[in-house]
Length: 436
Image 1: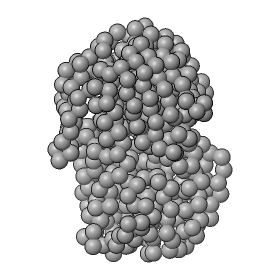
Image 2 (image 1 turned 90 degrees about the vertical axis):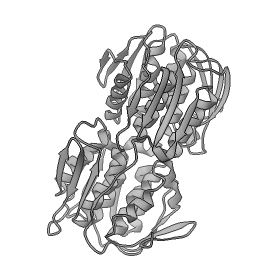
Image 3 (image 1 turned 120 degrees about the vertical axis):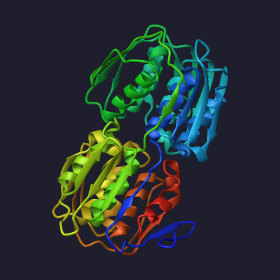
């Protein structure tokens, strides 16, 4: 870490002296890890999850499963969880539990649906920001399926009480405009309902690739969705997940920061273990990087991004609805591109860890950029980058993405760098490893 000076509250990023040329191993996918943890808890038998992510988000999920009476052993050094599922009909061992979901959206939505399979009363709560994030569509759906789920303050969010005696199942409708996690949560528990599950999507569904990811992990554990598109989904009831050993691939969202570093510096980064067979939607960033002037080499065993130092990044006009977690990464490249960059269809990101559109606009202006903010996106016109202390708003992706600016521009300091613990605890060490 000699290249980066740190204090309790800020971390200064020193520009790279040469284009990056590196192979970077990134931790396991958060999205796959939390899906696999929940499915393994519902399977009959012992599952071993290899290559798993250990972070605040996955710790919340594992701790909550233990509080529900499901044994979960962990070995962070080996990147491995061991989950002892008992299968049905008593999927949830305890009749009463209090769960803390932190700021983990996957854990918040998935656990709320999971406890509806139980037989008892369950209380769930999160951080102050989590108490502002929407839950009303999921609560309404669970009530229609046979549970009693309510927001205790009446705001449609946490804290939440769920009283359940198993889920009957049936047909529900939910708006698709707020979060795909509502739909994934129901799909994950759908096979264990008595009557099965039919979901009708009202309007356009945001972050669609995460539905494909959910279906893929379910299939890996032996359960097929009988019908799936982005308007209508069906899961037959009375199915059982099969316990197994399961390898979790590297996190595509995390890999994106390092691919962007290659784009930014006119260098090369290869991420092994993340290849052409991946179903993670955030690999859609690669197509954008190609449009911006990069070369992408995709192989079954890894992906490499490079850019000729003599070339220039090009601004893009991009619909990021399907890969909204990559919006901050693209925004961090925009100051170094030729021409404006426009980010579209991101209204739902105002409801995430922070109002991400407002936060990105504010911090880019702090860097001297010209930014037009509109309800569902941003237009960024590059200007000379000036030194700044970057606020992160407790949002791990703000910290990781805006640190990339400091690889090119001097005087960039990241406030509250510890917020990366949410999904990537050793991000700063791996970012420092890019130095030769």
